[in-house]
Amino acid sequence: MLTFEKITLTMAVKKRINIAIIEDDPIMAEMIQDNLFLKFPSATTTIFPTGELALEKIVTPPDMIILDYQLDSIQPDAMDGLQVLAKLKKILSSRMNWPFKNLN
Image (cartoon, rainbow, N blue to C red):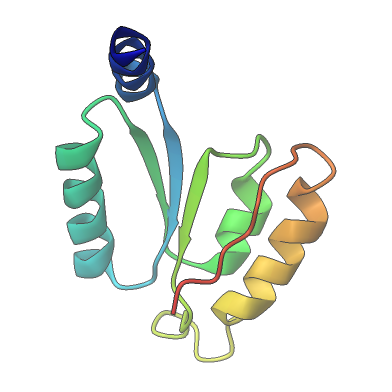
């Protein structure tokens, strides 16, 4: 049993993870990306500076989305994170069955 768990963990760590980061602050986006690379060296990350750009460009559902709540530093009238999340759910939920978590 212990061997099986070790094999599972090894396989999970080696799996390439695709992560979308939706963050309008470039310093924060880079910090998030750097921390993800420390934890998941084989991860592929894509940074979107606006929710609108993410909605336009995300075609294939990523394994994880990190989404900022306030996305108005580039465009004052930009959608906030909850609005982007609602649209992402609508667009991506039909393509993949994955949970949406709100981490406050």
